[in-house]
Length: 215
Image (tube, rainbow, N blue to C red):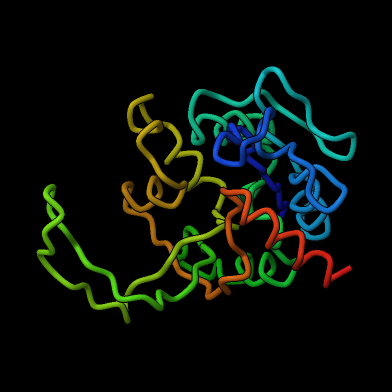
């Protein structure tokens, strides 16, 4: 297999209070995206970062200009790496990913499986509410998963899924939903809450604390 890692890095960083794209905020002495790039480079044959037109990736990674949506950014990176047999997509804002988790996702691409995604079992009770905030049902949490990245796909399945109109790509919350919509099979690979997404200043401090323990 030829594994190509893709790191979408177009988040604005507004909720962090940053004056730069989130992926380039300094985390434990490095740009946040570098933590993810380093891990993917330990597993993949090639890593491509999709960045805003006004930015550039670190010297350790290739870059392409991202699109107006996350999925368009992924598509741009996919087009830049036609040799891939498997794409490994990981958010720059999840800097605590490990090589072990990436490898487990890749290994989960068994026969008949189009994608494998990291996810954590939902621990909280989940309520569904209407537009007025009134609870209409309580969901059975034993079958619910909080989806993370990496998300790993067979190349043909992802390319087909990304061949969609702009509105569909803009509405997609993750790449797996596009593959699922096309009838592809996507399996869950159990992850841990530690692989959280850095969104707020508190998240940033928590990530720094964890990385400090690892180093």
